[in-house]
Length: 216
View 1 (cartoon, rainbow, N blue to C red):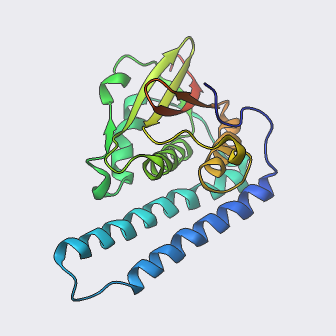
View 2 (view 1 turned 60 degrees about the vertical axis):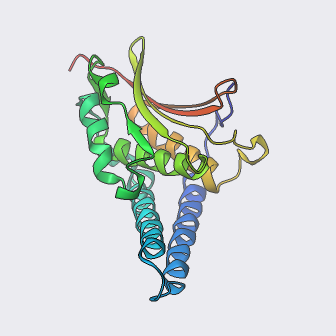
View 3 (view 1 turned 180 degrees about the vertical axis):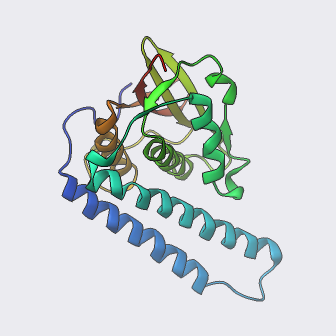
């Protein structure tokens, strides 16, 4: 079942304003978390707070990295990239606290054709999809990242077990729908496409970033 916005595009200025507001909310949350830290709390509680602050900072960093391709799409330069290289690079952008919740299926990239994309932009788009997926997932849910090939296109898929996104909210520029709108706008600069689908029997939501394959 297709659940995400599939056509049309938001005004770049609206996306930038909404993105700035989203980042401000994330940083305000981190500041509040830090302000509520109790020096007398136990080690486990302090670690949980530190993990949440670290995760929020990493998420805000990936969103900030998407300002450049939104403001200057002409600067996005697609290159032939090995799919495995892109998947391997994701772990470096994730917080350690997410290690047990994110499975990056590197083997799915083994026989994937070389992909044409802008590596830095694609990296942060995928990280943004991962952070949003973790937020949507159940408390003990595991998020999976993998590659798939469809003809002459290669998809990088982020799959979670969270509840199906509310269709009534899909057009609003906040939260997960905002990440979809930003992703769609940035992907357009490199002949990429966004697919958001729901596998209801399996209870899984899939966000796929789709790129053209290339001979190298």
